[in-house]
Image 1: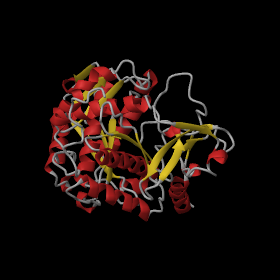
Image 2: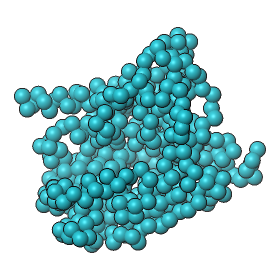
Image 3: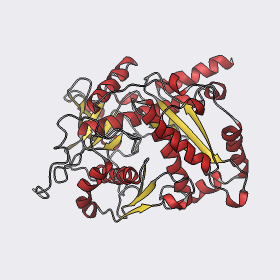
Image 4: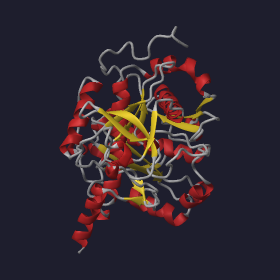
Length: 423
């Protein structure tokens, strides 16, 4: 087997014990992760890891990882409380995309009605989709097999919800379901990757539900920054403050019960000639300090994405929209002039010494809200041995950023509660 002279990527972790806990929870330090994957970077077409931290005045580490022959986007991003953590974040994001673009697992081509009589099939009616969806239970599409983490049995899901190969011609049945990187994750251990993928899906669901609640209820969830008692998060906020950047943090946690935060940042001073786009970031984890750290570092990453201009999925219209002065001032008024009253210590949290315990907690919380399928598709390639997984959770909302997005049952319920209050 190629590369079998290299140690197994997860061989040092029979149990997923947390060995690195500064800003994120991993079973090995980011330096060790980088050392393990570095031999594979040329094979995957990763040509550059660029430290772009110095393009901004904030100083929170951000990198951009270039993979020119990508079949989705060519520039991945990474952030962290240290430069090594940011590099590991960006490299692993590029690696997981490579795996999702080049899936060689067995597929089936059949309609839902043809497949459901002989194979356990996911509840497709609860999967996120757009109003432009071409899905019909009688039309054949591609399917791939995963494992239901709640039942332990096999479960077939639409291939479109798993792959990231966006080259043409598109796969048969394309346009039925959302294709995105949501729920795609890599890690030092399959459990680590799976846990990370699930928190991302819970985060996106929470964000969409929070946006349905209306401005008054959203304002009540703003965090009082003075109550943040985690030294890592406080140091990140101090960096923004020293750079003249205002910070607002909102608790967007949903009924799932995992802490999730939205962080919005903008320049405090009105300087149109040097305007930098207001930016935002989100984070979710079982531990609230890690969830907030992710939101803060992602906000710094989003700001640097605008400054660097290298991301290939940000069109010119996106820059023009965010440099509009009316929108710029609206962000300033909301972030700089506003303040929060909710104590950080009132937000949910769960601590454990292993990633296995985190995953068990996540699955239990999902069961509590009526989720009965959590399907994981193992995309790990044996020639690399780097754990990569795609998780699909029917019933959770995706991000509602597209005007064509159709709210699912949870989103409709949250939206109707606001309408009832207005009425």
